[in-house]
Length: 223
Image (cartoon, rainbow, N blue to C red; front, side, top):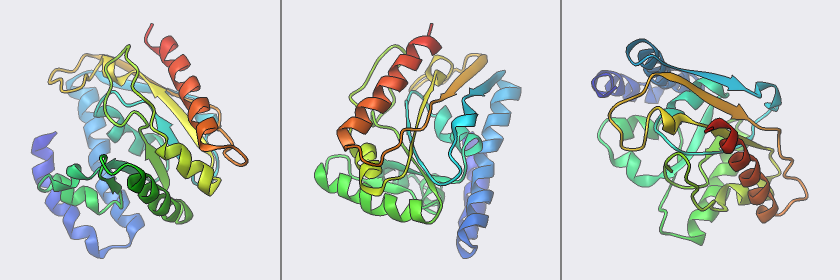
């Protein structure tokens, strides 16, 4: 993975002159390459259930966060997207600079309310341009069998903009654990839930509905 970063990231930086759709396509091929390498070298594949729930237009994904795997796999599973992420990721030489070209919403997680306002303002722009917005409400990777506190930022974005919410659960942490070097062979199961219509709902209602679906599904995936 890191060997390919040193080759692919400099090439990705050259795409700054291209229109965003072309830039996104080129840079996201790196993620597809990693999925292929995982399948060939580590015998780690994935399956998706619930793809029929995906809405036709832009949406907000609220997802479980267990691994680095989903940050790459979602680029192949879902339409063109951007992510709410900690700003420190953009400081990583080459990798972070290339990531910056994909228009992420990079926040200071200690900023509190200001960070939520940033998510809403920039998230609205991304959604209106047709991009999906991926939010990991737990904020950091959580080990299998554990449950983090679900922050409200992604739900506020949905309540303020009216865009639909797609809850997503997966068990990637069972195969590629947080801070884990070794990967286990097998099949990561990704479950896409029914769309949550955010219109007329409060942020707290959206947060509770998405958390309930995700965590109940996790009990099934992690059996």
